[in-house]
Length: 500
Length: 116
Image 1 (spheres, rainbow over the protein chains, first blue to last red):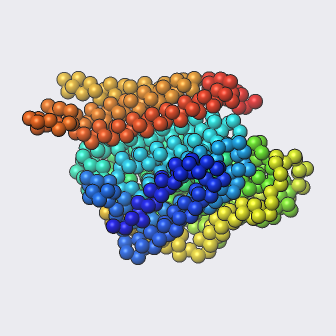
Image 2 (image 1 turned 45 degrees about the vertical axis):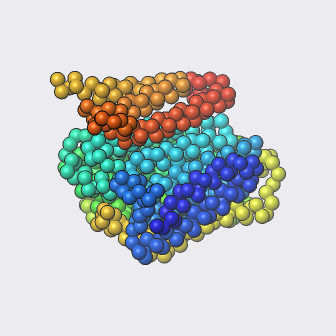
Image 3 (image 1 turned 30 degrees about the horizontal axis):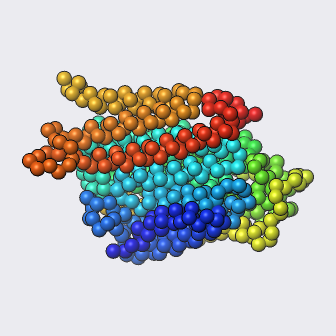
């Protein structure tokens, strides 16, 4: 049996308590960074295997499914696994470098233990083919996330984390109800077994209720409009590394779960005629895209601005899901890949800027970005590239996602929806302009007293590197479309065709 | 009489809605957590009710007994209870820290402090 699948989950899980035992916060950070690097390597290897040899399975403890718990890897989760592992590795590296400065006085060994638990949960979610395992890992990752967000330097992080806890736990409880109702009707928890047994009982109200609970829970986790209110607070108040990690993986995993549960498991059982789920998702997605972009325009804090931008981007993904066609799912998956890279890069850049400027516990404001292009040209350029990617400029990865989405909408002749997507893209230009214009056009603000000593050159380059790699990846994926369009297309085909 | 036979389900749903109401409506953060716990307790009740087998005994092997209640939901709920306990622990820890930082655990007062 190929143990690579389970190592992806077991290694961070086993290292989390090690971080606490190590006692030194900095050492814990480097330990976490090493683990994250291993996970990236493993993910890339697994992706290569799946691309070459087809889907792979792993039965935990050797007990065969459907009685035992199974981990399954096909092209869909292999792809998302690689993206998540890449974002995790770079964010962890950045966290190891920056956290001693950004969070002085925190017991970093506990911070990184929580970090690794979040990573464990995320990896487990991507690999599992057991419905209850989804709930368990979701909660493992979420609880760790609440703890991580609460570490933010400003006390508003505590309130944001509490609100996130309430929303997230309600979401997980709904998902549990959904899983329970499905189990009640089919007697199995294995996703593939469920896919086989559901069509027979799909018309019952129990299954429809289960489906509804599951859908609402996942939408809450993914911050789909109007269940998005927990996100801006959490992203804006959390430590920069945590925002980068969350932005890259939290909502994307929820969207991936939607793809896995609804299109693979429910695909043959979806009573589409009875329930207007497609229309609801489409509406929610478009509203999210418009509302997110609009509110982003009026934000004074760059991180809150990007958080609202994330809500808009999730809106695009959900619009793709709502279409339900191959093209729609393709757009959603491409968006998952692009947005994870772009948003994490954005938050890492902002975090680096905040550290270099020495803002300390005070939140970064747009006014702080004035004249940045002269003082920190590299960072300003990276923020510009990320901004262009978010808008969907050609040659960046963001363009492909937008293009596929508009194509999918036009294919179904939804002219108004395509227009809405274009309007929200225009709004994206406005809020990106709000970030970029002060950097390049305004005169530098008088340097305020920096909190703590200036950063040495090694640290400065070390902090810039993760964001640089993510930005480069976003541009490369935009130019070299084989990966973002080709592989995502294959993944969607496998999802819709096989359902195995 | 079908409706009355499923009284467990009715209780579970009522508790679920009550918990959600307490969660949303309360201004006190600790009360919100209580509402969360009520919601979770309702879900556990629902799950366990689903697993009941008529005429079955507790799922412990016993000589002379043929029918047992389905043990799988019980195991799942044990896990879910642990998750609920962990969530409550993290929630309460956050409430303690919020109280230390803001001096209150009433949501409207915390919001006012935050805006200040």
